[in-house]
Image 1 (cartoon, helix red, strand yellow):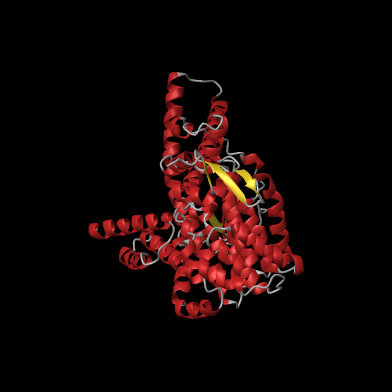
Image 2 (cartoon, rainbow, N blue to C red; image 1 turned 90 degrees about the vertical axis):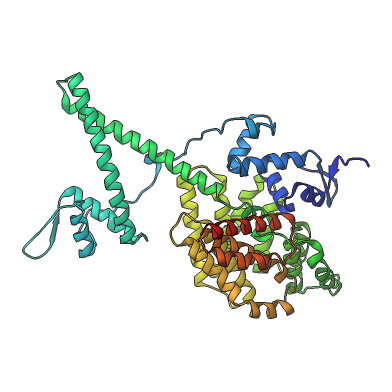
Length: 495
C-alpha cells in the first residue's frame, strides 16, 4: 500500500492526535507551513507535518515552552523542528522597564484608611502615628505616602486582608535583606575604610534597589511563563474552546437540518444553528459558509457578526488578526450591553496573553479579560443557550487561573450552575440546536472533573469523570479523561 505524501486536514488531525482547529491555529501562528491549495475547498498538508506537530506538542508538554518561544526557536533555526528538542530556551527582555509603566500615584492628602487597619499597621511596626487633640491622626512623610498608596490599592480592588498579609511577608524578607546588606557594608568598611562613607552608602542603596527591581522583573516574567505553560491548549485550539465531537455523532442531525433549508432561505436561526453545529465538529469552513449567507441579507445581525469575526480568527493569517481584533472591539464598543460580545472579547484577551512574554502586558490583558467577564455578568441574557455559553466561558477562564485565590472555586461554581440546569437544558436542546448537547455535556464533565482534581475533591472528580467515559469523543478527549481518572485514583488511594 502506497504511503500518502499529502494529507487532508481530517487525515492529518487523526494521525497527529490533534483537532483540525489546532492545525489551523499552528498554521496561523507560523508554526506550520501553509497547506497546498489544490482546489478552492481542498487544502493538502505534507505528511511530514505529523512529525512537526508532534515536535511542537513535545516542546509544549515536556519542555514547557509557550508558543511564542517555540516560534522564535523555529525562526532562529530555519524551521529545523529537531531544534525544539536540542537548543537552550532563549531569554527575552520583559519589554517593560519600571520607568515606562504609567502609574497614577494619588496625591498625598489625608489617607482614607479604616482605624482598625491603622492599628494593625502600628502593631506590626510598619508605621508610626500620633494624634492631635482633635483626634486627627498625624503621620510622618514616609508613613503618609505608604498608607495613601495602600488606600489607593484597596480602592482598586485589593482587600485589606490581602494587603496586610503581603506586607507582613515582605517585611520579613526585607529585614533579612537589610541584615545581609549591613554585614556586607561592615565587612567592606573593615577591609577598606573610606573617607566618603555617605557616598558609599548611597551607592550601595542604589545598587541594591536596581538589583531588586531586576530580580523582581525577571521573577514576574518567570511566573507568567509558568502561568502560560499551565494553560490547557484545548482552550486555544479546539472547537469553541472545548473538545470537538466526532462527526458521526452530530453530522446526521446537521444533514437533517440542511435538508429543510431552501436555497435562498432567510431563516437566520437555522443558518446560525448550522454554523454553530459545524463549529462543534471543528469544520469552520462550512460554519463561515452559512454565516456568509446571513451576512448577505442581514449584515447587522449581532450573533452573525460575532461568530463571523470569531471563526475567521482561526482561519486567517497572522497579519489579518489586527483587522479582525479591531472589528471585534468595535462590535463590543457599539453594543456594550451585548453579553455574548463581552464574553467572546474576554476569550480574545485570554488568547492574547499567550502572544507576549511581557509580564506587565499579561497582567494587563488578564485584567481586561476579567472586566469583560464582569460586564457579561451584568447583562446576562434571558436566552438559555447564550446564558450557558457565558457560564461556560467564565468556568474555563476562572478554572485556569489556579494561582489566584478563589478563582478555581469560581470556575467550579460556573460549571456546576450549568450542570444543575441539565434537565432544563436537555429539554431546550431537544427542540433547538439538537446537536449542541452532544458537545456540551462531555466538555462539562471533563473540565468539571479536572477542576475537582485541582481542588482536591477527588471523590467528586471520579464520579464526574466516570460519567464522562460514556461520551465517545475525538482522541485527545479520551486521553485527557483517563489521565484525570488516574490522578484522582492516585490521590484518593494516597488519602
